[in-house]
Length: 435
Ligand SMILES: *Cc1c(COP(=O)(O)O)cnc(C)c1O
Image 1 (cartoon, rainbow, N blue to C red):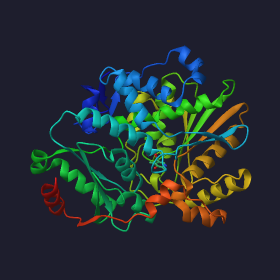
Image 2: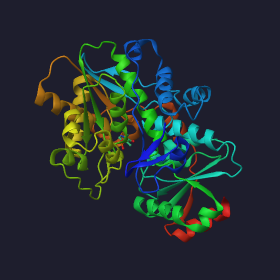
Image 3: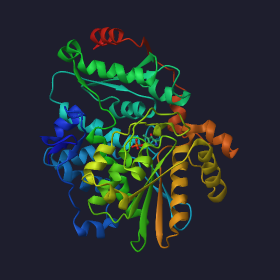
């Protein structure tokens, strides 16, 4: 399988190249040249496949020509090692819990798989791979946990000092070994700017082997389709229509769902649920893509003003918005409504949902009210554990949110970070002296 850039469909690279480069040279995102189909027998017998087997059967179609089946099995086993259970709110509405990984957010699925894949691709290189990531919180810790202890790879996380939550900072700064947290005295944009500069700086490029492991890496996208397929399996009946409501920011998660559908999964509709950063919602209704500066909300992992995976979605629909509209709807909700959503889910179903999931719930409810469909199974994707947003959630439901042991453990550890000013020369000197 070859991979093309969304900005030049004649420009193909191998999977290895796509993974190690992250972004195409022309600034586009990598996409597989074709979306393979599952054999009918696979879909009909989904019940008999474990989550890991589903992951293997899916990944195999994209990458087994480059990573042999045996190695791929090993990568799946080492990365897909936490569950994604479907929990019923009632007979028709379900929650797909994607927060059972090491950092309690769905990004663990992509980060774990990407880390094992990169580890495989660089294992014979004699030069260490240096990964630098700018993070506003969640991405960085998922990436760091993915690469933790991986030989031949060092990770530097740049995060804006004082601008991530206490819990997020603990997750970023309590890993040792090959992970270093760089606490930048600036904003998230400054961090991103520093990373971009590092990739274009000749001294750094000559001396170090740099990679970005950023959120648009194709090795993060592919594993995200596994849990959609595994969710359909868990429904255990194929008579009803199936709708997924996906809390969306950079649109990577929903893109992975669209890929699962295109591979043949019986999914009827996707709902892209957005917060006040509603650029995609507006795009779908007006046809105009108007990126703008993001605003801060309670569902902060969705605070994206220029969703990069839209390029991939447009590629999947050959840039035909009518076709996109026939398979995707989108609704947006502000913080005031988000809080109402959290409260409602707690009161009506006794389930504690996080602010991102609450936006997904509200969007689903709006869809169901507008269409009054019968015979439908709705799945709300819960992207993070409510304990990561303890303050907002507890203030809303007036009850305690229990902290899972793997989070409690890191909260008790001591913070280690290197404080740097947000000046590129400072970062450059630091990297040249320590790597
Ligand atoms: C990243 C993230 C999202 C948004 O996912 P995209 O793939 O960027 O659309 C939603 N919720 C949580 C908790 C996240 O970390």
